[in-house]
Amino acid sequence: RDYKVTGVQTCALPIYPGISLELCLHCEQVPESIGHLFWGCPDVTSLWSVSYSLLSSLLPGIFTSPPTLSHILCPFTLAPQEYVPVVASLHAATYWVIWRAHCSFVFDNTPYNLVSLRLSLLSLIKQNITSVFHVAKQNSRLAQFELTWCCSTSVSLDDAGLLSISLGDLPLS
Image 1: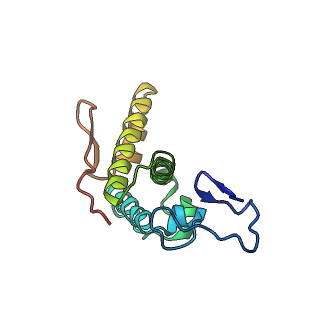
Image 2: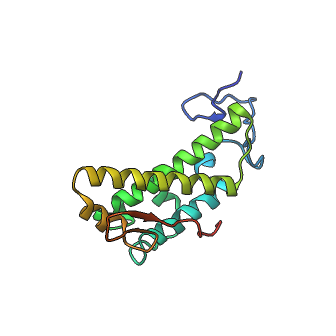
Image 3: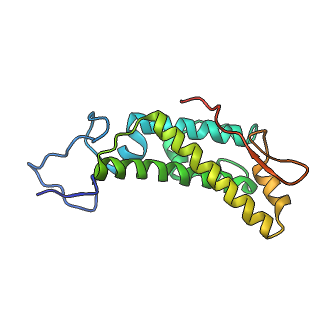
């Protein structure tokens, strides 16, 4: 019997003696698990480093932690309360990029690598920042947006209130 759900072993399903766990579909190094998918797979571990580099770029001097499993599982103590939206957005986007790439690989046989994961993360974060900006603008909360998101030269508002996002020069890992 195969107890796989969308290509990931789940701990909620029974594992019987004699039934071998398949290796990770991406790295083919260790048995596949949810923990490996979201943290242990080499390209994913490198993506978390990119994600945390992006956090350091967005929150310079405020965010300085390297990626650890405990922070990835519970990121809300990484930065002061007023920057939780930035941390939460980056973590949610990173998880989404990993899950979307995995599903594309499982269902569409579309392989991924660190370069494609990084590009997808940067695109998603730019879309998210832009969406948050437009909501803040509609609700007359640009000052709050600026305090939360414009802590570096990566995200800024000009005198006319136009948004500028520059995230493309981040390293691969």
